[in-house]
Every structure is written in structure tokens, then in C-alpha cells.
Amino acid sequence: MCFHYQGGELYAEGVDIKQIAEKVGTPFYCYSTDKLTRNFEAYRAALADLNGTVCYSIKANPNLSVVAALARLGGGADVVSAGEMYVALKAGIPADKIVFSGVGKTAQELEEAIRLGILQINAESAAEVEMINRIAVAQGKKANLALRVNPDVDALTHVKITTGTKENKFGVPWQEAHDLYVKASQMPGIRIAGIAVHIGSQLLDLEPFRLAFTKIASMVRALEADGIAIENVDLGGGMGINYNVELPPTCEAYAEVVRETLGDLHKHIIVEPGRSIAGNAGILVTEVICAKSNGEKNFIIVDAGMNDLVRPALYDAWHTILPVTKQGIAPIIADIVGPICESGDVFAHERIIEPVQEGGLLAIMCAGAYGAAMSSIYNFRPLVPEVMVHGDQFAVVRKRTSYEEMISGHALAPWLQ
Ligand SMILES: *Cc1c(COP(=O)(O)O)cnc(C)c1O
Image (cartoon, rainbow, N blue to C red; front, top):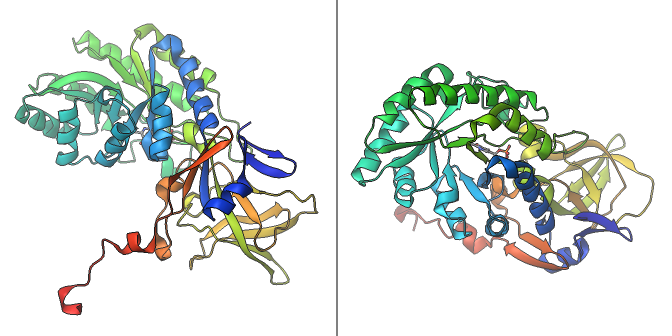
């Protein structure tokens, strides 16, 4: 059991959340090593017969210890910036297990990736292929290239996290991909390594995956018929998780779709899960600053804000919110809001919850992906600590930023001194 109640108190594995709060203060993120491990192993087991590599999508949660925990399990990484590549390497992921995706990679980032000889660079345009070739030739190397193709499949998810339709900025248009492969295969700095697709995030239905993978299989066949060998088939991430009442597909069901659509090609399958590895392995713990009522409405004001967890404000996302100490008293209906001067700083509208008084703790569940990763110091609020639990041990794996650190890069302009 990763997050569970024991005698009315919320625990992360064997550690009392209240005890962590006393030690590190609030708000803080708390990650379960056990949950991360189970989520990772579920993919690995499901893909075992498919020659699969699980390249964890660092952007979901780039904490060094989170990535290191996955690296120890043999995981690779999907990175979308040179910064994420740096984290992946620091965490012990070897370069030959790193995939570099992203719609706007800079020349500097590509130079680094080519120098390191990473597993695959997923290019998203003809111009990018040219740039990769130029850089590789200058280094006297061949870059391992894949094209991220846009299969024009609607992932049926939130519009801000749909990436696989022709209306959005991602990938090489389906009709242009084949010709670009032919062109790229003739460039001296390019070695064709694979093909990539990523259609969106928080998918709850396997059909968009099936459509996309079927199209990818047909493109692989067409390319190989033209003498262009494909080693790696990178299927991206995107599997949804249960935030509230969702029923996401299992890894086995997902792998079955991979088997049915691509199994007979016998390629090296890469998957890039982010949310479905880190999401339910993390919570955000926050303290109630005050509880107030204006006669019509109850408000619970907490010390975490949209700068710490932006998903509710950005995507209208639902997060289950639990009292860290269950009192067994009748619930109320309340808005749970942060302290930021923005009307969007709301974690939950009209939520049924046990009344929690000033000083009480709440746990915002399923905050391990796109939580700390998307946090900011808006309102000049420090980045909150991240804690990792392992059995009955816990460790601060990122400390709270201090005001000195927050202001350290600032400078007075000469005319203000
Ligand atoms: C964001 C992203 C992922 C991870 O998506 P999840 O929904 O978190 O699994 C994988 N691949 C690419 C290219 C991405 O941009």
C-alpha cells in the first residue's frame, strides 16, 4: 500500500505524513518509491515479449531521485530539452537509452545530443532534419534519427494535451513523412534509427492508440519496402490515470494493442510514459491556513497555491483531496483555495470534505506528474520541498528554495545602485 490510512492517519508507505510535515514544513510533495516501481514494472512486464524499453518521460517529474529510482530499474528517458538530458544522465540513465523529443530543439541542444550519441533524436520537421545533418557532419558523426510523425488521430483528451491531430504543431505531417525519410536516408550525417509518434496525454481509451499504431505499422512497412530499415518504434506516452472516477487501460491491455498492431514487425518498441509512472506516486501536502464561511459558501484556504500545482487552474483538473487525519465527522461542501491573488487559484470547487480546521493537513492526491515539474515562484513563493519515501524511511530530495536563492540571479541595474 503506497498511500493509505492507518489508525485514521494518512501514511506514505510506512511513514506518517504528519511526521514528515513536522520535519519539513508545508506545503511539500511526497513521492512513494514503491508506487513508482510498481508503475514502471507494470510497463516492463507487459512489454517483455515485445523487446520493449520504457523511456520515462522526464518532463512529468524531473526530480533527480525520481529519475534515479527508475534508472536503477533499468529505465531509459524521454527528454524534451538539454536540461532534461542533463538530469537523465545525472540520474544514471545511459545515453543509449535516451530519446530526445520536442517541437523546437535548438542547435545547441542538438549538438549535445549528437555528441552524446543518444538512442534516437525524434525530429519534427524537414528543417530540423537538415539542421541535425549539418551538426552531425560538422562533428564527423551520424545522428540516430527518427521522425515524429503526426498520424492525424484525435486522442479524445483535453484540447491542451492533444498532440496528434493535423491542427496542432506537433510532428511531421503524415503525407510528408515518407518523402522526408527518403531524403534523410541519403544525408551523410543521418542514420535512420526509428519512427516516433505521441498523440496526447491522459488517454482513457485505447482506440486512438490502435489507430495511430496501425498507421505507424503501415508506414514502417512502406519504408522498409523502399529499403529504409527501421529499428525502433517509439510509441510515445499518454496513458491516462485515475484522478477521480476514470478507468484507464491497464498496461497489459495497452501492450495487447501494441502486439496486435506492431507485433509481427518485431521491432524494438519504445514507450515514453510520464503521467502513468509518476502521477499516482506523488501527493502534495498542504496546511489549512483558515476555514471561513460567508453564509452561503465555505472556503478552506490552504498554504499551497497554483504556483505549486497548476493543473486545476490550467486544465480544470480534478484532484482528490483527503484529510491527513480522518476525524470521522460529517462532511461539508467547501471550495478549497490557495492564497495567490488570482481567482483561478482554486484546487476544488464545492468539494464534499470533512471540515478541517486551521493547522490541519490536506493531501492533494495524484500530484506526482506535472505537479512540482510545472511549479513556479509566482508571488515570489519558494519552490516547495520534495520528499521521497521508501518503506519506513524518508528523505528530502529537493529542499525548499530560500529567498536568497530566489533572488540570487537578480541584479540592480547600474543606474539604480
Ligand atoms: C509529454 C510527452 C510524453 C509523456 O506523456 P504522458 O502523458 O505524461 O505519458 C511522452 N512523449 C512525448 C514526446 C511527450 O511530449
